[in-house]
Image: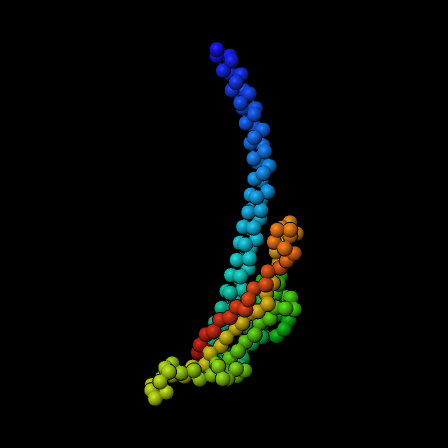
Length: 177
């Protein structure tokens, strides 16, 4: 009786082994797709974070400068991570998409955008004499295209796109000077 039970277990094991292989063959493409999509998404989030941090750093840098000065320094700070007073900027690009013709960095301050950035009052009531006026500076990065690393592999599923274009990222701060 024991020998017969043992052979039945062996046969059941062999049959279930084939079923596991079929299940793996069916689920492996789905798991691979989810893994690659997760990697793509995390790479895009990391690139977005770099752009946001560099725009913030450039706006912070310009907030300590006089209005109308430091625009090239801010552009170099966004793209290369170091302020440079002349172009081409020193150092290497932080992200590959920063060299694309569609990517641009613009600066608005009290000199080149006086209607929106000069003499902003700290109160809406114009009769208050104790309100101070401040100048603003805005740094905007637009047109960044993040290259999708697995676009060739996922092209049938996600379309023919090889890049992901971010919207405009801007930061506005108060100028101290």
